Length: 103
Image (cartoon, rainbow, N blue to C red; front, side):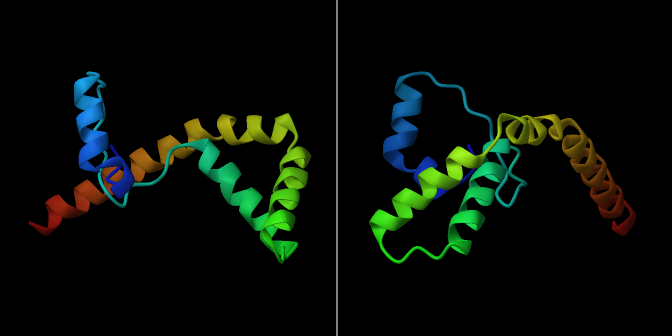
């Protein structure tokens, strides 16, 4: 679980337990390691730049901008993650070493 309140509510926790769903413990403030989040952020940026003025326009602009995403863009997001994970591991290792040195 990523400690997002909607994912840690009692109802959700009970449902996960009842259906025996295994969840990973996920520290709060951890980097988001899901490429779809990068895609949502890009969509948000593109739509915001077009300045929708009402809900209908927002819906229309979301659809238009979503349609502009080429599959290769999505592929690049996924393909970049091994490098990103390596960088995170190295950073985590450095932080751990700093903590040890400060003790």
